Image (cartoon, rainbow, N blue to C red; front, side, top):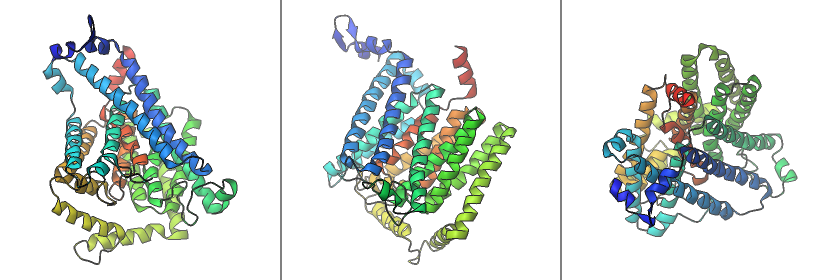
Length: 443
């Protein structure tokens, strides 16, 4: 391998390997963060544009691919340098993570599914509309984002990412609250605003999309309460957590609520295990959750009505009386999996299933769905076994990712929201421990 890498000369006495080895780790740390931060800022800009209606969606799609291409180039350079630094196959095999193997084969199988699709161009490049631009190229961007996020080592950069994600959610939640006060008020202030008058979805024209975002941003605010050192900062994130939670309940998205509810239980358990002094913040977090739920139930009955529908569908899943929209789509998707079990319909070639795991299986076949689930399962199993040793930034990433992945049982992939998942998984996948952080500081 060493000879192969050094033979690619670009000049007399100069090789790609020698150039790659000159790049310092600090460069990748900063470049990875800059790329991820730029992608998040692009999403924030898209939110703000919803108020003014200045630019069309295709402008943001273009910049999405520009940043994604930069992320792809950075990922290739980083991976090439990694192989240059580790000439021994034994060392490479020892350091590789099992979930990265699953993810790698998943991307290969997804391409095979795309290749065998009845509509290759649409499957590869995606549909040209605002919601489902989900061709294989989007998943290449996701893979690049994952690598860029993974190479971030600085704790301050990870903290900035969590903060920006939480601010994004809070901004959208504020617009939802304005809708509650006066459904026409946003139009009065911003005539170009793109919002739904009769539904509380903030700056999203689909209530489900808002719920998917909240499953990430709310837990980001929660983990910041424990990560931040200054007391006033903790209270700021506590307030933003409460505002976003209220907006989510008004939004009436079952998947997002279930995800937040379950994740907060895990947050409480891990927070107590790590430091018993956290019980005060846990009481405040749980108290705000219960208070919001009681208020929402008294005034709207959203929670009980949603769970009644879910309970009915689960208990009647094998007969035709399970008739909610999601259940119908799930049943139809299983028929699609039976029709194309090996390669599926191809990337983006099946309409929204409202379950990401079924979605990947019906589009990529059973092997593709299995590889995705295996990657997620192996990553979280490893994290659970090391939970007491993980540093707070890694544990935070795991909890944020958990929330989104739970909501994934009720949602589908939306390219301009789902990109946050590989960001968080990239941070979590390093499995950094407290002892590793101590060694880095000592060095």
